[in-house]
Length: 374
Image 1 (cartoon, rainbow, N blue to C red):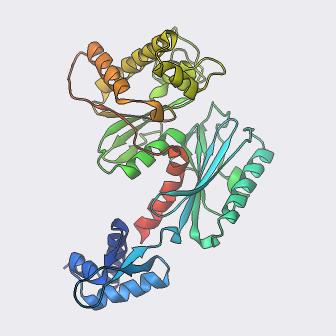
Image 2 (cartoon, rainbow, N blue to C red):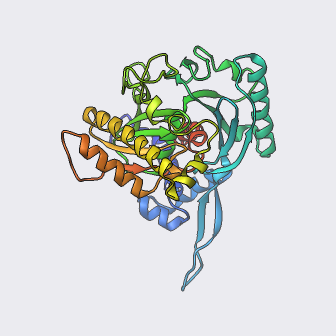
Image 3 (cartoon, one colour):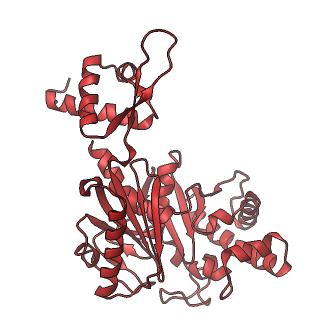
């Protein structure tokens, strides 16, 4: 045994191991915990009492038994702690709460147009505060608030380093936190979506995540972690130049991937994504042609990225719920036609994250930090 390990360390380790074992399983008995962790029943009992006192776990019925007394089942209390995710868009604000399992249990969407003034920050903050109050939870149950923004953020989440969509470059988190009595952080929206993908899929490893929404966003996943890079803008493939003579991008350059592969590039003015796919799936020629052109550009871009980082691709964002496997097969075919290294192995996949992946992903880091600290 390491001479530096104290009895206190062992107690902390047992406490943590028992909680995490219960967390990873729906329900467990005292004997099952003892068997799986190779601990004595008194040690398990002592720690279960501590966890119950802190309201982190609870008795959850009994297991069936053909002989003797039925064993008590233990489960975590999912709402022992919660986290808040806020997605800020140009014209709307989505606020939701997730529990310790990362499951959203309450949500609201408000029509508040973004403005880089204190009255806006105060209005949104008061809306978040009112939302939390409606949950009927104690203040100490709320771990923090994550603000998902269409912008690049500092590595500590305290400021926005590049925010041309909302014109919010250099905005400090204090604009919101001064009105809220909880820890607050900024997160890049595409990286939030990728965070949710990682949360629900524990077998990703390495991948390029493309969030195809009104605007395009990207994230690199390396060893099941979001890779930020030296200055925090790794994965921002949306500003990769596809055609230097193409349409202007909001970044000030021309022909970025954003101008070819975002929903804004796909839809005509006033058209909804739902309507577009309704017309597409019924085979309207003009929509089929437009979709084919969009997939051409997407395949061109994916091929270029894949030549630099040869990994799996995940297509997420607002478009993902409309995608079918036949669409992915077409993209694969188009990529194989363009690449110097054709391979029939599929490497492009539809996101498995839920509809509100961005605000959920903004709330997840607080949950992760809490779980890591137990």
